[in-house]
Image 1 (cartoon, rainbow, N blue to C red):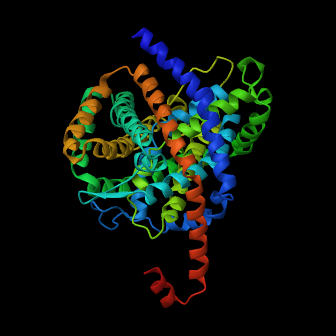
Image 2 (image 1 turned 45 degrees about the horizontal axis):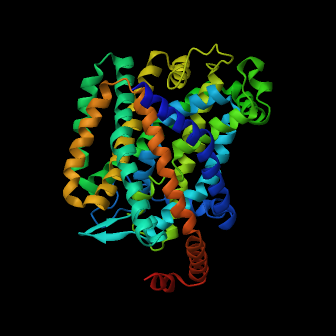
Image 3 (image 1 turned 180 degrees about the vertical axis):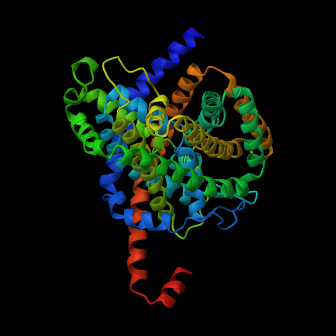
Length: 469
C-alpha cells in the first residue's frame, strides 16, 4: 500500500502541479480568444436564461432529456461539493490569499472551456433505446475516427466510472459521515447507510428522479450557504476591504501579506489557486457535459451559454464566499502556526459568529454539498456504463455505487482521496484532446448561433416564433 500511495502521489504531483495547470489554462485561453471572449459576450444571456429558468417544480424529465435548468442543476450538483468548503481553505493555507485571485482567473478561462464541452455534448448526443445520451465519450469518438477514437472514448468512460461513480462517491460519503460525527456524535456507519439508502432510491428512479431532486436541492442548498456566509461576512464588515487587499496584493506579492515565515511565493499562490479552482468547477474535466447533453434546447450553443453559469456559481459565488468567511473572521494564520485545515477553517469562521450552531450549519451544508455531488457523479458514471455496456448493466452499477457509499463512510480515505484526484486528472487528457480537435466546429456553431439570433431579433413576435419552429 505504501508503494501504491507513493505512485499515486507522484502522478498527482505531475498532473496537478504542472501538466493540468498548463493544459487546462492554455485550453481555456485558446477557446477564449478563438470564440472572441464568449464568456463576456454571452454572460448576460446566460444569466437571464439560468436565473429566469429556476423552477422548484419544473417540467418533467424523461428518457428523452431534461429542461435546460434541470441539466444545469445536475451539473452544478456535481460541481458544488466538499471542495467548495475544503478546497478554498486548502488554497488559502498553501497559497495564501492571493490564491483566490488565481482561482478567479482560472474560472474565467474555464467558462470558455465549459461552453465548448456543453455545446459539443449537445451536438453529438444520441438516441439509444428510447433514451438521450451524450458526453465526452460520444464527441471524442466523433473527433477521432477509427480505432483510436473508440479506444480513447472507452478509456475516458472507464476513468469516469472509477473516478466519479466509485472512488469519488466514497470520499463524499466519508465527508458527510465525518461532519455529522463531529456535530452530533453519530456513528459514521449509520450515516453512510442512511445516505446509501436515500441515494439508491434516487438512482433507481432514473433520469426523471435525478432531475427532479437536483432542480430542488441545488437552489435551496446554494441559497442556505450563501445567506449563512453573507451573515458572517457582514458581521465582520470592517475586515472586508482588508480581505480584498490581501487577495489582490497576495496574488503578486505574497510576502507582503503572509510574511516571510510562510514561504509562499507567487508561483505557489498561482499553483494552488488554479489547481483548486479547476478541481472544484470541473471545467475541462469532462464530467458536466453528461448532464448538459440532455437539455432540451433549440441550438447546441444555448446550453453552452447556460453551462458557463455553473462555473460562475461554483467559483465566483460559493468558493469566493468561503474564502471571505475565512479571511474576514481572522481564523487563518501562516508560518506553520495554522492549527486548522480543510473544512475546519470555514467551520471556525462560522463558529466565531454562530457559536456551536456554526458547527451544525457546516454539517448540514456538507450533507447537501456532498449528497448532491453523489447524485451528479453517479449520473455521469451511469451514462458511461450505458455507453460501454448498455442499459442492462445499470442496476449492477447502482448497487455497486450504493455499496461504495457505505464503505466510504467508515474508511480513513487519504489514499482514496489521492486516487480520486489522480483519476479525475487522467479524465482531463482524453477530454481535452476531443475538445481541441473539434474547436473549429464549435467556432462555426457559435457563428451560426450569432447569425440566427440577429435574424430573429428583427422579426415580429409571431414571425420569430414561426422562424423558431
